[in-house]
Length: 174
Image 1: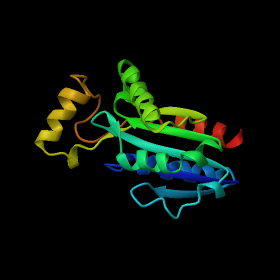
Image 2: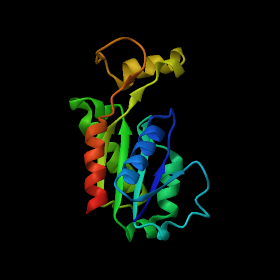
Image 3: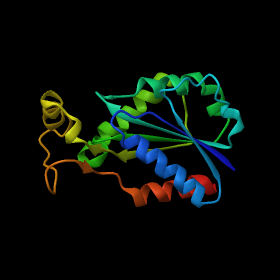
Image 4: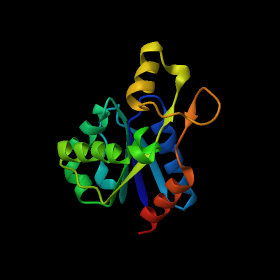
């Protein structure tokens, strides 16, 4: 079986997640092709894949424009195959943020008209080393909304890799 893993990333965590998905697909004995949606999808033949995973991260309450363009451009092909949408956000890292994280998915699906077979909210990461003062303030006061992050200061990865693997296993096997 051939599986396309299309992704959009801003700070690299969604790329890391997409790469982990591809490795897991290979471990299960199937072929995986990574596609960065920042590239033009014009030459990509989605219909040559059996299943498709689309991963996008949320910034400023929206998924990447490149992911939205990809889904819109390839909507007809996506609707004909089993698909999994991975929505990566910091909101998904906190129980009280899950409703907000789900609202990002709902808005994305409404904007694109896509109806994926499955979707999963995936907790992202904080990359403080990459933020300037302004972005740090947005993270602290808008995204985290005063929530304290456990552990040492600096970068934090919230992605639940075991849970992601279980979902990929199920998606690939069904």
